[in-house]
Every structure is written in C-alpha cells, then in structure tokens.
Length: 106
Ligand SMILES: [Zn+2]
Image 1 (cartoon, rainbow, N blue to C red):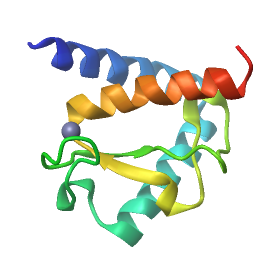
Image 2 (image 1 turned 180 degrees about the horizontal axis):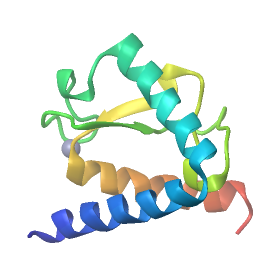
Image 3 (image 1 turned 120 degrees about the vertical axis):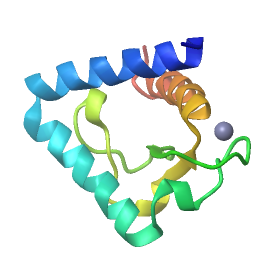
Image 4 (image 1 turned 90 degrees about the vertical axis):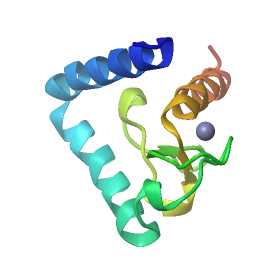
C-alpha cells in the first residue's frame, strides 16, 4: 500500500470507531453528505478541487456554517462542500483541522 492508502485506511478505521461511539452525529454528517450527492451529484462526476483528477469524495471545505461535534462536522449548505480525489481529501482534511484549531483558539 502507498502511504496515501495507509492514511486513507487509518482515517476510515478512525471514523468507524467514532461512528460506533457517536451514531447520531455520524448519521447527521452522513445525511448532510447524502444531500450534497443528491443536489450536486456524485463526487466522481466532478474533478478534484485541488488537482483536477477525478474526484472521489465530497469534503466539508467552508466552515462558516458548520454544525455537529468536532469529529462529525457538517453543513446544511451543499455549497460548503468541495469534491476531492482521495489523496487530496487527506490534504484538505489537514487544512481543515488547522483552520478549526484557529477558529477554536487552540
Ligand atoms: Zn486531487
């Protein structure tokens, strides 16, 4: 596996553990993403916002209207999400955490 594959597998395992502990929060975030897919299409119908490769997933990118607990943030505004390919989604997540730490004063 490449290091991106490892990081993606790690993230997936982490999110599964968190979803088991916080099922309602995970469901709220999943529903918000389902709404994005319904109104804007599958991420795979778009190109990655960062590198223009075929996108693989929608990620919350604009943080003004975020809701939910910190590990399952979501937005009801489908335009707060951007499509990313898998490797770039990891980078986007890092940028998002950096921004959130600033917002939260950490
Ligand atoms: Zn990309």
